[in-house]
Length: 161
Image 1 (cartoon, rainbow, N blue to C red):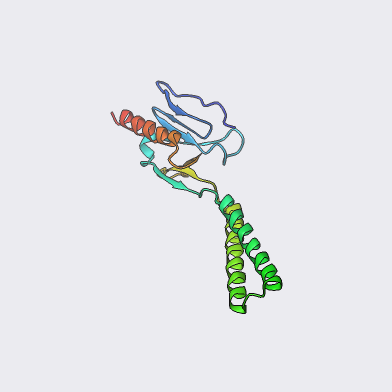
Image 2: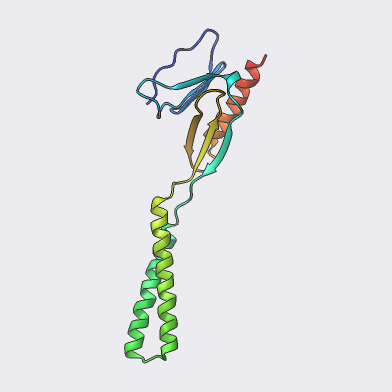
């Protein structure tokens, strides 16, 4: 949770959320990575243009579960058909391989989806001679990240006068 920020003379807040604050004179952020009541700040003239990019992946858990279930079902149907219908060995082998491959791909996708980061939009501000200020928002092309970049550009234009 972020703490209160003391504004300088003639300073206004242009953008503010729980991760970052853009004022007419400073960029203030990294509230989560800093110690309690501490944060990183830099004058706007010391901050380069932000880099905004999308990261993470959408979950494919439902597809993975369907593939895993279909693969297991194919293997079980193949085993049942082998004992009751006496298919030729080639057909039995093909059914088993198709089911096993589907089950393995489904299992791989399921495990992979558990460890991947969910979709996000990250904005990184390079500070000359200081730590990066980073803000990350859920989902790709997050409108809040777009607004942050827009307000930062506005603040930079205003401070260059």
